[in-house]
Image 1 (cartoon, rainbow, N blue to C red):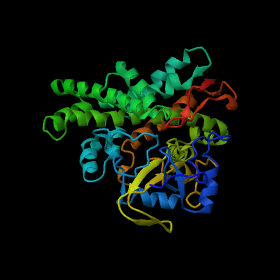
Image 2: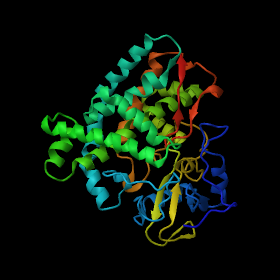
Image 3: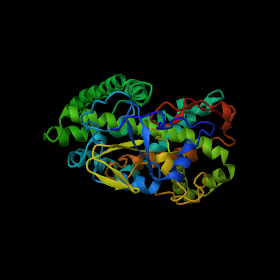
Length: 400
């Protein structure tokens, strides 16, 4: 990997004066070309892919590796990351498919749809509680975070009383200011808790994902306890923080577009498209996806050598005018289903259908329960959380 110099730009991280938009420099770089050199955290350089077309090609190319232990993999932190046992997002075929298929059934659309009544009940319970609170209310604390946390805990069979262990350690893992050692320790704490849980599930199984893994994967020797713990940590961490962010930021965006909010509430048939547009417009995973080439190949007319790293900022792809008309406009009428917010290829987010369902239920219910819902502080005073893998707000005071 080449060393950076004073003329090599760094990956932009802060969103600047337009907190709901990607860094403005991405538009300039897309205009200049589909791929360019970028300085990375360890002092070297990697290739930054700037356009939607090339990002989709890279994410679907079997010559791209997600294995963080391979030479040249571009870490987001200065230190070399430690691999997480059971984390199939860091695996290549055939290990990736073997690990991922053990939980695929849980996240199939038909199985996720069965959660609708329970998610609706949990949503209404949280809104009932909010209705009794003095205003303003912090939407993140009392609705956006607890809803996906409860859903994930029930789906996986994790006691909700233990949620603080996940919330605090997930916050450390996502914090880009944390050292790699701190992030690894937080992942290990979650994994070790889940190993103990799986041992309990093996003795007393229930109707949940970890019971299924204990009975049908652990007892058969297909997976070890350590692999289940590591995989479970990946799913638990990813399953609540991203949805919490989308509820908070989605509320802000809908309030900024009252005519589209009205359509969202009065025309249920537009809600699936509106949710996809929110995923595209917000692109909350703003730390960028990463790969390393396992062979020489050409991307956008440029030769990328074996062992060179690539960075794929999906928030640039989702604002590419070659992929979306007027991409900087929020428009629930557009067909945004081809966005890259869940990735693409074999590593596409396995829990995406759960997140979609939660938003389709939570956002309409929130606005219908509280007519006149509005921000309790000026937009300029909202505390956006930038130094995190998942872009969000630290708190969101609302009133009605």
